[in-house]
Image (tube, rainbow, N blue to C red; front, side):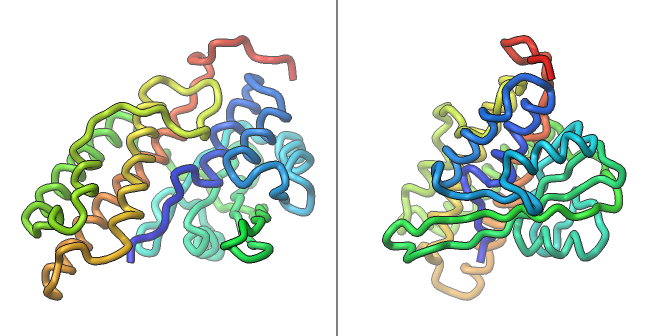
Length: 265
């Protein structure tokens, strides 16, 4: 089974708008609004550490936070995780984390989600961001250009594999998404201060994450165990490239791209 990847990962939205706030490009109220808008509405509570999100973010700044970095790990791929092993384990279990650069030691924010009420009736999600002491600040991952090239190669490889397996006969919409280069606006995750290339890469990754969700629902036209294994391998390669594209897009923050001057802190 492919790891689930939301079109707007919780850690991505917090990273994208948190970076803009730390650089003085938006106010704290803007961060809270965007997090709630993207992740369940104003009624969905977010707790950071032991405080409401607004106070928890203030505490991070007081602790010396300078930059936030998105990490989307999966079992077998712990790239970008800061250690120690227990922090890495928790982040892999969650499938996402935010590395806080600046405090000594650095910190890792790992979200846990609780759904209140039946999901079919629009159950409310509450998110508790645990604040964990990290061991180090890893070297940043691939930049925008490298992530874009990797994603393009993964799309070509996946398309070829699915065509060979005749997946289109079962789910033609999967190949349509792979082949369609229509440019879309990305979701709400990126705040001010991100270059156009980050917006373009994120929009493409978000579109492909929807495809992966669609493809994961069944085995398509694959029938034999060998066909199912080859299909899964192709989709895993694409999923890894999508994860790295997310990380590169959210990691490309540069306040010089902001259209408004920084606010006074």
